[in-house]
Amino acid sequence: MMNVLNWLAGPNGQLAGASAAATINLLMLSMSILLQRRNLRRGAYMLLNTGLVLSLVHILGIIPSAGLPAAADLGLGLLSFIIINFAMLELYTLPGKLDRFALLAFAAGAAGAAAVQWNASALPAGGIGPGGITLRPLGLAGIVACALLLSVVLPRIRQKTKYALSLAVYFAFIIASSAQTPQDSLLGAVIHLLPALYFLFLFLILFERVVERMRNVYVSSIRDGLTGLFNRQHFLKKTGRYLSKGLPVSVIFCDIDNFKRLNDTKGHHQADLVLKQVAGIITDETSGCGTAGRYGGEELVAAVARPDVKAADVAEVIRERVEAETPVTVSVGWSTVTDKITIEEAVKQADEAMYISKTTGKNKVTAFRPSRAKSS
Image 1 (cartoon, rainbow, N blue to C red):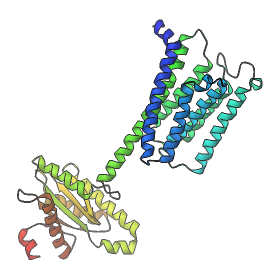
Image 2: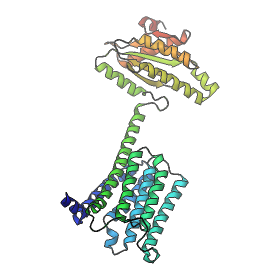
Image 3: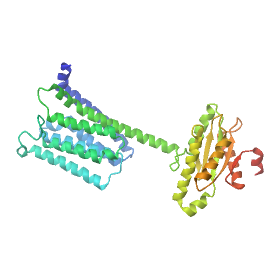
Image 4: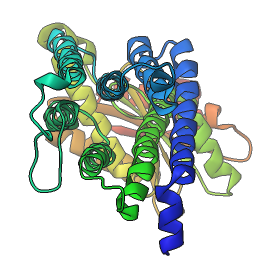
């Protein structure tokens, strides 16, 4: 065990930790560049790219290799940390003027701390800190940045646990670096490994955000934005899956009565609320026995795909609940898919049955009958 700790605390461990951190950094940078090119929150990804490049310069030790002061390198590391965290914020929210001001203030604080640390004569002897911990200005600035980011960024993003852990790792790195002693192999190993762990949490946040965006794009492609019901295309596709499984399928077609009058007298907002209410009722009544969709305008459809559930009963419950729970009524028609007709034809038949309900008094349920359809 001690051999492993000594190895991690030594030059090989430093190289391994830096290599791991740089690799994760490059993976994030590649993802971020691709996402930026797709015009997804370009400003956020540009900011993230900037922070990742600066961080990579810090990880690779380019500034010390060029003979520049260590304070400049440490200041660059803190600046990249600040930029990356504000980029994470912008992945979830549109930045406001206060956010931009906060970013500039944080960056100015990092630059000021680096300048103070550069000027050794301005420092108290041995730095600031309790016990064996020696906090230099950049360390203090990093701790302050962690605390402020915890209050500024954490409440406004979804992945709170991962983000809080990333800040905790960065904070631990500052403390461990400030408490390092040449003889402490455990502390040295921790210092070499924490940056890679920090970037791992950032990578997980970015990856999860990409998955969230992909999921949102997919959901918006199959669902109606107002009601949350499946759109026409996906409703037909989902109903087709029921048929492919050998399930009996019946289609219910609902049209809200006097919806145009409601729109004209009460306004679009009230009409939208009513539409969502009706959609919610249809969703409730088809849950566990089928699916629901928005066919267009105030026309809502449902599919019943359980042998023990009668479409006529579901349709009647929908009609009764809409009348009792909303300020409107619905005219309803239904039809059953057979071997001789397609889903689209069944929807058309249910629509024809609904039309009969609409033209014979409204607020009723009508089953499709070929003779009725021909006579109408």
